[in-house]
Image (cartoon, rainbow, N blue to C red):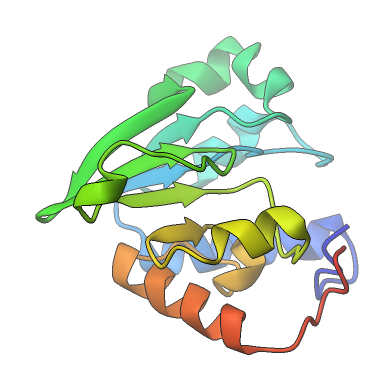
Length: 168
């Protein structure tokens, strides 16, 4: 779907786990904006056991297996449909789906979402008009967790590039 640069699922899993753990310590909070373990080779709890940090799941449309797995749920610090957090002094609204109006939008708040992956369809075109609306798709972020500042820069760069994914 995303034309990911891996030969197969095992190679992708190994790379994603390595890249995650290179950046995340056990004291870091990591917010996953949905679709955590979809079309994968193992259970969500298998992956979660291997990943550093305090993990927070913002439920996506492909998380039905994850939220039914009691072992996986026990490994999350929180599981919510939407959340509002503070990153230093910046308000951030988290939702798997892009939302046209988010809490704090008119006061400089940020909205971090997933769901679009690397698509550049009409929803992307609409959301890209807002500098504070940020796509957290892993393919925009080097397949690794990133800070809010890095997410802002990666989205800026993605907006400036040609469409490498052809609306995958």
